Amino acid sequence: MKVTLTGSTGFIGSHILTELQEHGHEVTALVRDDAQADRVAAAGATPAVVDLYDRPAVASKFSSADGAIHTASPGDATSANLDAAVADAAIDAFAGTGKPYLHISGDWIYGDNTAITEQSPIKAPAMVGYREPIDRRVLDAAGMRGVVVVSSVAYGDGGGAIPGLLLGSPRDEAGNLIMLGNGQQHWSTVHAADLADFFRRALEDESARGRYVVGDGSNSTVAEITEAAAVAAGAPAAVAGSDDEARARLGEYFADVLLLDQGTDAAKARAELDWQPSHPGLADAFRHGNYRANGG
Image 1 (cartoon, rainbow, N blue to C red):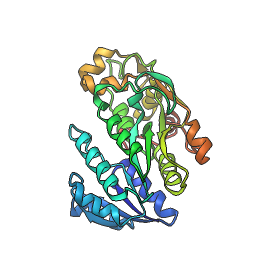
Image 2: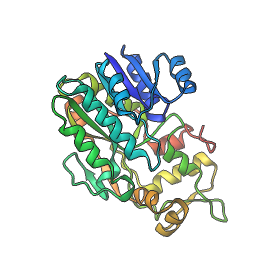
Image 3: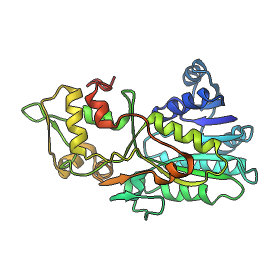
Image 4: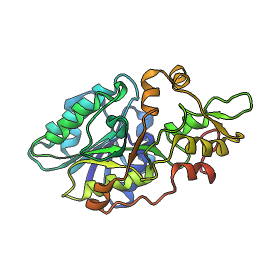
């Protein structure tokens, strides 16, 4: 297939680019400047410099593809506008064609819930409150095969924003890492390569549509993960923090999503697309040397 991809130089998008190419797909990567264009060209993709906020320009790039995947995110207050622009461009380009458009979302939209499924109520904290209306536009678009991939916290290959945050946790006087909150909340996680495998499967399978929650099912506590991060960071151990400390350190919005107690099992992804995670969990990745204190 000829696939147009956003976010190809990012952590998740770069894994998707590799996965697509390994399975014979031709990828056009939408990038913001010439430096990124050089990077994706070196990786074997065809670069196209475009402003992702420019809905007509993005729609034009999508129109020539057999399908599109959106993973780009500025990670700031403009995220909502960018996601909306790209989703609406896909709807403009693919209406009435039946072509697939895969749009990334995240499981934080479900709030506190240790048994998340696609049917779970949306209880999005403020930081991700913008996601559901955009996700819904994708799912309700007529004549397009809309897929919303609800990703868990992504990690792997020494990368990922949240693993890096844990490795850089503040330390107490004894050098122990301080956990986010009391550490008893669970996180749903997924290796970026396993997530990329799911994206490919959903792209290729014409029956795939709707929302899919994707997590590896380990659902470890933050205490377990931070204790493993302490091994990678060369710290003696990890100790419980507090909600107030986390909010003071990270700001209320970001802290609130990291303090959520969540779990998933990706039953729909497994049943419909035969998806199976194949990489060690995040705690094992920390313990077995896949991460270092410098994030490499």
